[in-house]
Image (cartoon, rainbow, N blue to C red; front, side, top):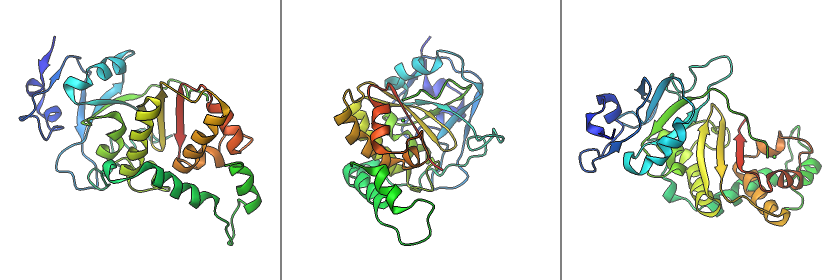
Amino acid sequence: MTAQLNEMPPDLLDLFADAAARPRTLSVPLPPGRTVRGDEGDADRPTLWLSDEPAPAGLWPRLHAAHQQSGLWPLLLDGYDGEPTRPWEDGEFWPGRGSSPAEHDPERLLAGWWADQTAPYDGDDELSNDRRAAVAAPYGRDWPGQPAMRLGLVPAGRGSDALAVLGWQGAINHTADPGRLSAVLRSWEDRFGVRVIGVGFAELYLSVAAPPEHTTEALRVAAEHFAFCPDNVWQGQRPCTLAAYAERIVDAPTWAFWWD
């Protein structure tokens, strides 16, 4: 049965700034849950609805199919090891603090991050310049499993914007502005059919409809991954080189990222 969103509980309706101007419908029954406000940031309303328990099997694809009518993008949410309430129940995200993804050029962002990781370094560093050069020369594929994740709903027009709307801070040691991450995700969404399907404390999981099919193409994509999330290569599966990483993402239906 399809219900008008304004018939839903008031806390769910709080996700929408434009609910009155743009009537929404939600055709998928939701399990028990509640909205959560970020503990920092400038948003004047919640940006996350959180299920109380792990999401039932099959719920994510049904909510994804309903996104155009509901305006709610589903995310599978993982917690911090040993502290399951972090970051979602504890509100450890900063809505309104980041920029808009539309403000950024993905190519320039990736090029800048790439330069940061490959530039010679004169100070004390566990990564020698020789190793930096080896990792980047010449310019991983396993699905992370299906943990029992809770369900979140974010009022985002497209899945790539969910991190920006949420104010996700999982990559704060790389960039404190989730709008920049979403700008790159928009580009991948357009070019590779990427969909944001899951987010953890410092992890991001994507499905990929059109991954690179050949090593040459994969190497260029690997360079983007390295700029976007250096830890995927620096601290990933050995050998820790761009070429080896590229081999692992050929025809990979999912991409996973982790920031230290």
